[in-house]
Image 1 (cartoon, helix red, strand yellow):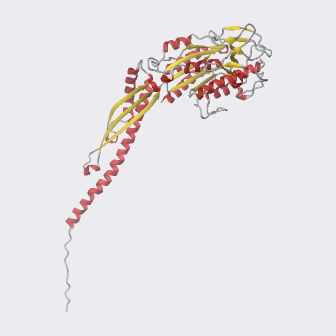
Image 2: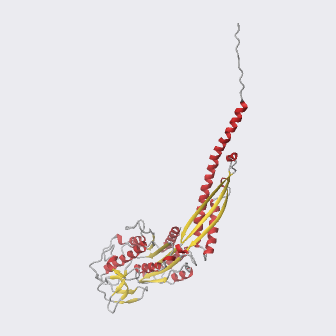
Image 3: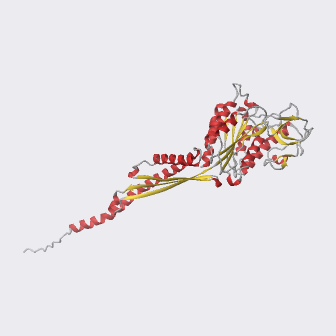
Length: 454
């Protein structure tokens, strides 16, 4: 007898499962699409940010070109546009870029420009289309501040640079490097950078005063003519040159000073003259006393400090004065205040020995540089020739810390200076082994100043 088996038949809703699976795929595809398209969007955003940043920086740098602000703004916009297009090519991740306004606004009262670049990019989506999102809109803004510049160029014109007509003279090369490597890098004309010129040897001359008005700018042809007219001869009154330069910088009214103030000093030797109110026979002499005039212990010559080679006279000066020239140009300060590094022999009024005069000359120039830096002025230095890496005087018992190169580093407050002040602006020292290196030095320091202006 067979037992009947009861079989049940179940209907399988295959069509319903497929429908359910299809419905579940929609949000899944949307989620995947959101991840993929968002990733592409972030890539476009990063690229767009980089492009507007590059454009704003390039536009700010381009502000050095142009006879007036309108021409500078036009040049900035054209340059910014080129850099944006180069950094965000059309079709990147399928996106279409649109560069908006490039605005360059000059604020003379605060001594700066503000450059702003706006841009957008439309990126078509792929998977996100299933959610009804066909396009991602990305935007970016880049902004760069460029500070206006007040700069004083301070050139050593001492006799050690050689007669300009001599085949061994470095002076023509120095002039060319100063003009092309430095002066030519900045923005002349109304509303532009300010550049002034001081030369020094036995005393110092303000050859071209810096503009003191809100008109700003400088005349490049005049600066070129002033530099080309310089002659060589005399000693090295470095402190007097820096003092005149700092005084001229500070003569710009506070309300129209630039956001960046710098001094660039060139020299081929250490200072050997100290400025003061001297009391020789025959009456007072406001000038610079030379430490290396005589073979004996008592230097005698005094030059007027407003002329490179105008000799006041040769006098027997038995004492250094107790007061020297105030670097601000107002009043007088004790000579002892210049003795932060080197102690003079004896007590004020100091004996007029060659060594004391040389020490005072070095103290004075470091004091001027320290005062400039404490006022926010960047100091840069260029040194020429092998003697800067040796002792230039043999009557003071100096060591390596008195090499001209060590002194120039201290003036600039370089990172490798033996007395760097971290609270003050850090400058650069560039060593030119030969005159052929001068253009490199002037150009590299000009580039660093322009970088700081950004």
